[in-house]
Image (cartoon, rainbow, N blue to C red; front, side, top):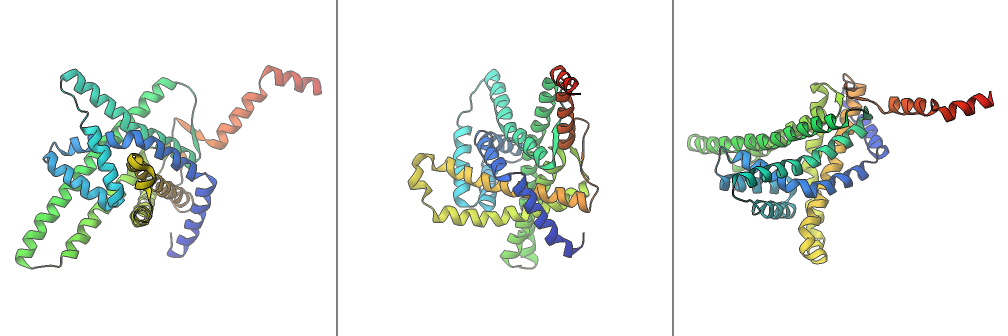
Length: 316
């Protein structure tokens, strides 16, 4: 894609974003996130704590959340995380049950995200074998949950490496602090880009090339970071805390996830437009079909009903 084609792709993506009713999809995803974000954070912290101490992981998570979501949204997310973490129980059976509940809760938002991305990509899952499909989809969402924990671990490792490198380089050749802060920001942005690329590549029921995915993931990451300042400005200027009282933290998380979902779905639209016009295109996988094909099949099945055939015969 040439640079002069970029504005037209953005414009077409915006039109598709409106046509697919992305605002409604974002609101639905924000609702599901209330029940999934806290378990997701608990699992991610637990995985990263296998290498680092839990205190170090929580401090890094707080810093990452503030960098991504802004101070007020980060405080609200930390409140949900603390509330979920304090509900841990002792005992083998209870621990296993707790882990299962956390996994199921954390995977809920990915299941909803998968359905929304299928809508945006214009595919529907073929009917049949509902239970097997549900189990397979849940296993896939479980893998995405575990991937979040792995990416958090990678982010922690990168931050630790940059911190050690900055101390060593400052001993040899002092460098400005903002340079290391910029490198740390770019490392975090890279992790976010990888996460978005995995979501676009793995979750929906489509076949799409990695080359088509990376550009959309990068655009989504940049919009995501830009949105942090916008949502932070809005939360700082609004009176949500006084208006909603104890429920303010939940409302703040809802608003942040709502904007983040809007950004993610715009990135999905951008990826779809780019792949169809300049890339390898988007093809449904073996378990799905295009929405137009599904409508045609449904129409044929309706016309093939005995009542319809008898009416057509009388007319003829």
